[in-house]
Image 1: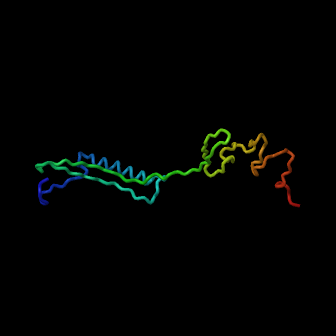
Image 2: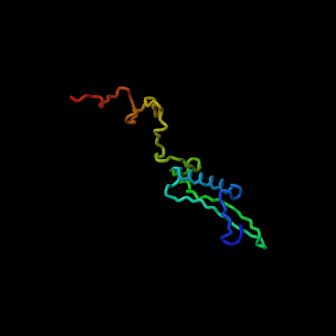
Image 3: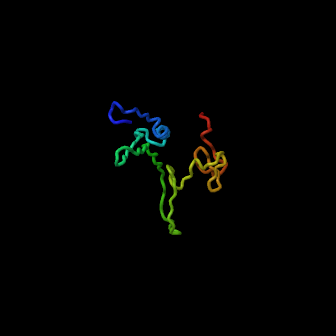
Length: 149
């Protein structure tokens, strides 16, 4: 390049640094688009790509070092929330933390029930899969099956 606007050669960014700037931009663009498509990131947050050229000349002002960088700004991944019951075991003095999510501590989760509901047992006793009641005897009348007179 020569001094003066009329003698300034056009500089092509895709040829600068032997094509490395174009390659870095391509990777940055992919990073930003992947972040935009990630359902674990907030959709409203703006993303950005910054291309920075910094120039440092020598004392004679006839040579310059140019540093080229490409930075991305993406949206952070949303935090995941859970619930934990915490306390101290009064018998041993040990502290504990148990994750329970939306389930009340001590209750059995549906996900931990067997695939065949007829096999559901609590304290060795069969449980009605529809009502959750423990069947004390097999001679229980099911009024739901009774016909109206």
